[in-house]
Length: 358
Picture 1 (cartoon, rainbow, N blue to C red):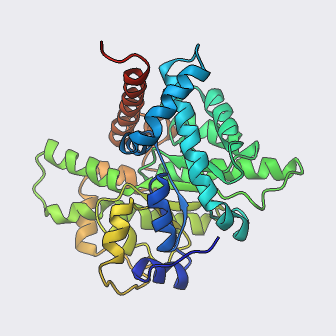
Picture 2: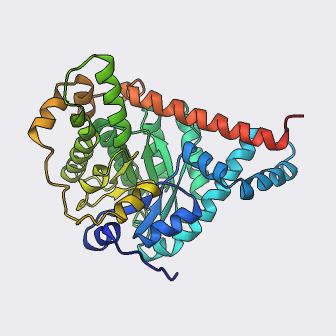
């Protein structure tokens, strides 16, 4: 594949540091442009998939109508998820040359398991395995919930490259990374190859920021609001150090961008950053001088503010939460509810095609 690259900070970082850029969307047009910035992968989730479909109604509404004819007994959900599969396969094709060149470490397209399966580890692992066979460079998202941790290990053992999602904290990231490690070791013990698997563990830094800000308002905390912009960055830096110290083979992935620090403060790390395309364009047009900052600690006065918030401490310390507590963490519930709402929106979109208002 011939790529016409676009000079700028993103391309510079991708060429001079081990930090990998993935696009936070499966939209083919955005992905092509991200690849020109040095992008080598893509992530997706139910909300992003719905947005991609909704923004390209000229393509997908006729396809929904065709699928309704081809699958006369299918539910709205089944038709909607078939569209997600097809959207993912199209995007995966754009990344396949990168996947081959980098032997599976990058060049992957993420597709997320159905959030309605979040309470069933077996169903999550089964769907992850099915999705992984859609294309050779698919990586499958499974949530870092108590149930999801079981599915992450099992799916990894079956040969699925997992992208852990619904993850906002250092304890979630470590627990998920260790589950992947157990799955890899089980697979190796069975004589199976793991050399081309490319697991990542997402930490949704911006959603942690969102939750800490909600907590600060809820609890009437008097503090510098600017310091709250650093909660996700602090957690991502801590998770990265822990992965390095513990020898975990999965890479940390930064997602849910709320500010440019979710990229700039992580540059230099052997990790993945996954900004939405609009953020990529902003960064690449900025003239920012790339500087490795992954090992630069968050300022002590900012950390003092953050550590005064018990909910942040739970998210920052490796033993701040048990797996049983992941499910009730505020950011987890807010995000899963959002993903479920996106699923319902996709159902409604399909319904309007196959059963329009008279």
